[in-house]
Image 1: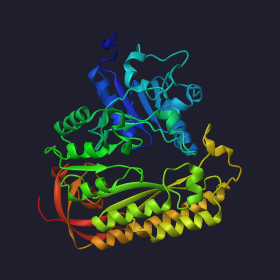
Image 2: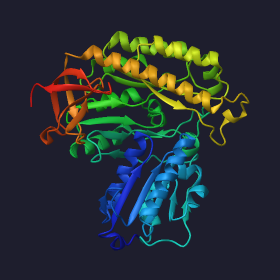
Image 3: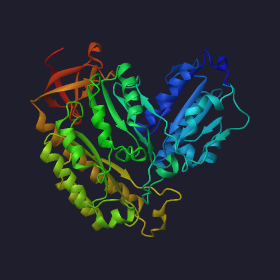
Image 4: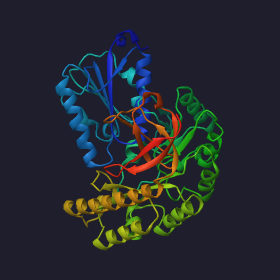
Length: 440
């Protein structure tokens, strides 16, 4: 039995690293702590407890986690420090060796944080609770709201793919999800809290429902019926799981936005085989072409990894040429880093760090060029924008249905409101379009 009286009037701050899935889970953990009596404050404020939900997708992610945690400890040496998430699951001993850390929780244990905290007092020795995740079959529903205007709804967790470069199955466990019925309840809770846009997130969301003999297509058809939600977006979905039926459904839906994010990872079939991906470039190209044929204005984001072991100059040039010729909008470029216990470490052909960085720079430039061209096509057009609450130099920004970022002069009355605007000009950094409201 948790004695919640020890948490009353205590301040807690959170910091989330990494993916949208982490943000949804941090929000769920935060709500449970606030219900127990905690007051949530910003990371920059003095707090009694700091909770870090970490990422471990790359070596750089590990380093960033350590840096931020150590900085918070230096600024608040008397605070109780909790570290959870993928980094904590994969390397609990490393995390516990950071001086000042009091509690290390694995990916599954984070949701029971209060059960592992007897008080907010510093510990003589850090406690570690990071159980075996790969046999875990429990799905913990989560959604984020309050931190951002848009809501991230967790619909799936874990992955069964075991790609050669990736540690996510070791950090998140096997693929699992809730029922459609329970997922709809979570979406409705988010709607009741004021969410107007929900992004469906997970590790491999196209895998949704297989343990319950349901499917991702079944899920989005039911979500589309929730009239209190204005918009839904599908986050990253594997090309082999993005069926034509899903694309066709999005095309005719009033609530699912014309916005896709599809991981390619490499444009070389040789490298895709080394990665143990479940598709080839021909299938990927067919998905892009189908989307553009049915929804010409769709925004398409693509994940790509550069510098993996075995990637020759020819492989990279093949990838670059494929991406250049595809009608896509934006690249999310990852620079490969070796991850412990992955099959890719058996490949002897190591790409030098400098070459990896140069390839990343080239694809970032290609991405900027494609995004700018996509934005330019829409200048002079009208669009409906859902504006965020953040203010930046007197301006506020939001996104159109097809994920074009627009900005107008800040007006608090427009936060979390859908506003019709006319696109005017590219911003100075070309990553946003200035706009004029047509109706308020």
